[in-house]
Amino acid sequence: MKNIIVLVSGGGTNLQALIDAEKRGDIRGGRITCVISSKADAYALERAEKNGIKTVILARKDYADVHEYSKAMLDVLDSEKADLVVYAGFMTILDETVCRAYPNKMMNVHPALIPSFCGKGFYGLHVHEAVLEKGVKVTGATVHFVTEECDGGPIILQDTVPVLNGDTPEILQKRVMENVEWKILPKAVALFCEDKIKIENGRAYVNE
Ligand code: GAR
Image (cartoon, rainbow, N blue to C red):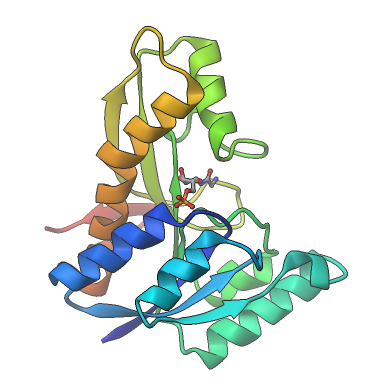
């Protein structure tokens, strides 16, 4: 059984999708053993506690800089014996030591079709604001491995939804979450735990 550690900062609906998938038996090769939050008041922590999952608060403001914070994060990941680290709405930057220590073992869900609307400054509702501003007709979400390049690691799964006339950032965010994020994140985690994702030449290939 692989130990899945989930990193959160906010509401935790993607964490909830993972918890529900595990309960349904959809994640056969792993179990969520710890949730780490960068914010003490993240609702995601309550979701974890309600489901008997260990929680750790690593508040960014308690550390002098990104390197101190990353060192603390690495210490927790190592002591929890992480096999897979999942960014589920984790909004805090870590330095390169963390993804180097867990190569192709950290994944992130991003609320757009990478390589569009990603990178620095593209997070949460801002992504959907940018999508509406540009006027694209299709958007979606991406699950990818975390590398040193922000939102630049190998893409594991993507899926799409239409952008409709009259959408607001909030309406679009809800459509992307419900139809894509909450499905592809648990699926990618399940695939990883069954060793069905291979990396070749910096690209991820899924063998279902
Ligand atoms: C999700 O839409 C996730 O894709 C996004 O933040 C939201 C978190 O919601 N993540 C990013 O923008 C990361 N760049 P949640 O806390 O309810 O899962």
